[in-house]
Image (spheres, rainbow, N blue to C red):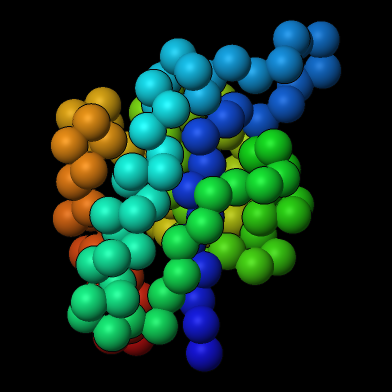
Length: 116
């Protein structure tokens, strides 16, 4: 069974706030590079996981229908509404992890889920 990792690079929409600009401010438009690095690792090690960018504008109600893990770009720790999604399956990347495509914490979470 294919499991999904959703990469979120925008904050959740909030009433009265202008459209999110966090992708430009916090993620430096590097999401493709991070996703590609993670996807290459998963493919190389034959994991049944797929990584894709969030296409829901950070709508947790849509994301939780198909995501097993959520990875958030830097700056979203207090801006991404998680509702009742298991917060142990959300990784908020640090600026350094993101800038260097460090996927260690994501891989560690995948391994812990695989062992269950």
